[in-house]
Amino acid sequence: MPDNTKTPPGSSRRPVVTRFAPSPTGTLHIGGARTALFNWLYARHTGGKFLLRIEDTDRERSKPEHVAAILDSLKWLELDWDGDPLFQFARADRHRAVGEELLAAGKAYRCYLSAEQLADMRARAEAEKRPLTVESPWRDADPATAPAGVKPAIRLRTARSGETVVNDLVQGRVVFPNKDLDDMIILRSDGAPTYNFAVVVDDHDMDVSHVIRGVDHLTNTARQTLVNLAMGWELPAFAHIPLVHGSDGAKLSKRHGAQGTDEYRSMGYLPAALRNYLARLGWSHGDDEIFSTEQAVAWFDVAQVGKSPARFDFAKLGDLNGHYIRQADDAELLGRIQDFLKHAEGGPEVADAFAAAGWDKLSAALPGLRERAKTLPELVDGAGFIIQSRPLAMDEKASKLLDADAKVALADLAPLFKAVTEWAPAPLEAALRSYAEAKGLKLGKVAQPLRAALTGRAVSPPVFDVMAVLGKTEALARIRDQAG
RNA sequence: GCUCCCUUCGUCUAUCGGUUAGGACACCAGAUUUUCAAUUUGGUAAGACGGGUUCGACUCCCGUAGGGAGCGCCA
Image (cartoon, rainbow, N blue to C red; front, side):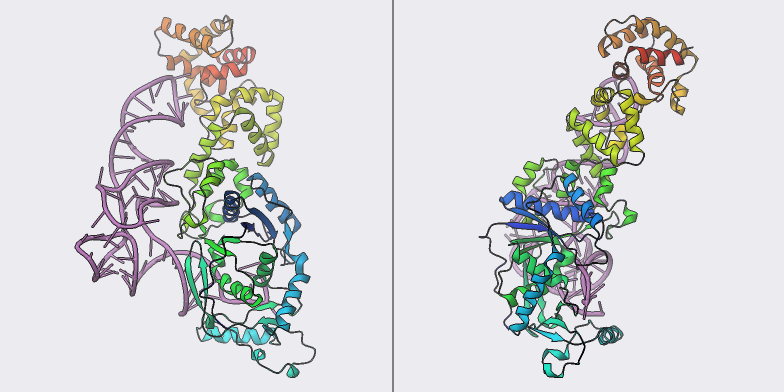
């Protein structure tokens, strides 16, 4: 059997078809989200197709609710796929048929090695500190000597010498000596296909032209290449992208914060911000940092993805998210907030409170609020003054602001504000300024207590905006509550 | 243990043999300001180490160190 050193890295002539193939054993991992994004970007960039395949052959761990969660996360990220998702388990007959074909062609054989024998070989290999390569005696044995009543597994008959080359768009040319690649099982003794086999059959049947996935699959690629070769199928192009690591450089795990895409949603990140951030992890376009999805689609090329792993940085994500919050128009932002509240812990109660106060109040406050929030929960927190009920609870800094002088000033201010005919920021500010001037006070000296009275805090959007949002009656009432 | 991959400011990255090694986040300082932000000006900060190749290496080669991934009848 010849090696495939000369095999080209997939033909670029055929139409581009990428695919994202999660296994539904949990939610969509943030690293998986990035893989999906790269596949999606590449497909959209080339005008190709982006397909979805659910790898649910692990019957124990695959759950329909995980499928739903993954699709939900992809939708939230606005990564639309073409056609219906393909479920791998449903294709078991096809996998079996290809296995039979290989068997008939002599490119695969029945192996009667038992689980115990395999475990023995593994133990011995470990004891001798050498990698396990299974040398099945059944590769060349006379099938007539097969033990009766034992269901065999089907193994691929692969070359013992030479090398298998993976020409990867990201990793370059990676060479695997064939002697390290044992005869992989393609069909289990119960007839179920193994992952490395099913993937090849499915990718072929789906006309996948570009396999973009995490580097953790790189060694699988050598094995999968062998299956392709045995079937005489054209190889897809491969692009193995580096993994995303936590802030300490280790594989992303629970202690680094969130792993699931759904968690980012409930932490109040915007999908556009997350997409932008994830795209910049391992890929760049010159000095561009903030770019639209359209720009990313126009610029993205998987060949430009770097080889080194990137660490996840919440500070940068937060900064980007702030940009997108400021950029979003009011209607969209309000929608995002409502969606966020639906998914956040305790969110529905807060949503009810806003509904009671009138969502239009939140809407009106958005311009002032959006400037000072990096995430949606920060924004909602800042909007807290809208849903407070009188008399307002004062936080520590706010009550400190409300000293005797301040209370006198508030008492003076109440009638002045009441006399303002147009309840809008500009005239209200004019009223306060003339009062401060008359009293020889710095603006902050009166504005800060006013802020405390209106919001219960020392920090808020501009006070006059707050007053306008609250409305005359409520604002005056809050001021009188604190006036001395 | 074996195989493969990686290594530029704290972090994400630009550079594709000749640059004062650039940008962004973070950080520090100033400006602005009714608070906090936002904005804006400036600043600190990097080629893991050791050998080659070359007139010239961050860039090419080798080695060392560190990090990562993979080694199932899991996916």
